Structure formats: structure tokens, C-alpha cells
Length: 262
Image (tube, rainbow, N blue to C red; front, side, top):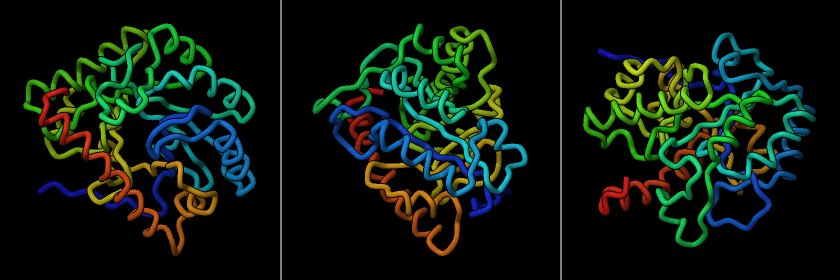
């Protein structure tokens, strides 16, 4: 029988962002650079320090945080470097490799406003200043719906693509839509990943291939992010809110399944 230790308030503190742009965007995943900068200042005032994803998944200090970005949108090429330099951030960006340099047609809300993903040159540029990269699958598809062959392609194909671009090993994957099951975890292990990341809702754990993160959304406040980062009485409330918001993304999963876009 497979068992996983539950994610708790003393687990590694990992925040998951998506878009980082001042442009008007549809949905709850955008955070403006100014809001992000103010949040970083606030977290520093609380006594947090920022560590790389691999460092924090080892023996995390109580006051350490790691910053991640899912999807790898093009906004990061302008927004991220000055913030990294100013605050000594060590972010990890997860890339859906079939959409490198392309628009996010995997997202059905893109008909309202589409967003471009980082291209090869931009990925290499960010890597040169210390950004770490991981896989977000190939097609940004729900991996729990994949056949064994497709799952192997999603896992190993995306890993190989990124390694060819970066010239270095890629050891982590963020499961699209935060969705995973036993087959996904097994495929990640067989593909050679050391770490797999979801979100902090039931099923995520402290095991290396199904670790939880807290997504940060447009509606979040400094206080709600403090609860996510420090734990305490409202920690479980934030877990519940994150789970509800993340499940709203399942509309894209269903539409992709119906129209076989992924």
C-alpha cells in the first residue's frame, strides 16, 4: 500500500505564481510586478529569506521560502531580472515545452486574450542569470488522463527538450493543473525526475514526487499569503481556498478532453 505524509504547516514553503505583468489579463492568475515587489518586501519584513527550490526541498529552514512560476510566460523576461537582482530571488520556472515561443492555445480563456510563452533564446537568457527551469509537461495537459505511451512522452519528451536547450539536467516537474495520481508519479520517477510539484490540496504530500505548493492569485492579500507562508489558525482555510480556485481550472481540462486539443 502506498502512503504519503500529509502536507502540513511545517512543510517547505513554496509559492506558485503564473503571470507577472502590468497588462490587463483575464482570470485570477496575474500578479503585477509592483504587487509582486511589494509582496517580496513584506515577506522580507516578516523575516523570510528566499532559497532555490532544490535547497528548500532538502532541510527547509522555518523562515525560508521558494518562488516558482508555472507556464513560463514571456512577461518574465522583463519582469523577473530586476526583481532577482534587487531581492536575491532564486526562482524556478516550469515550461510546457510544446508551447515554447508560442501562444497559450492550451488555455480556453485565451480566446479573450492570448499570452505568449518564452522562446528558446529567452529561456537561455534567464538561465544565464540564475533562473532554474523545470518541466510543465509537453502539451500542458491533464496527465491523469494520459495513456501510458502519452504519459511517457509528456514526461521524458519535455525533460529532454529542456535539457537540450539548457545544456544541463532538468530534475523537477510541475504537474499541469496540479493533477497527478499513482501512474503520473511512477512515470515521473521513471523519466528521472527528482521532484514533482502540485498544489496544496488533498493528495499533495511531503514526498519528493508529489510535493505541494501554494498558488498565489490576483485576489490574494499580504495577510492571506502570510497565512500560507507561516501557518497558524488560518492555514487550513487557505488550503481550502487554493483547492477551490485550482479546481476552477478544470474547465480547461474538460474542454481540452472534449475537443482533443491536448
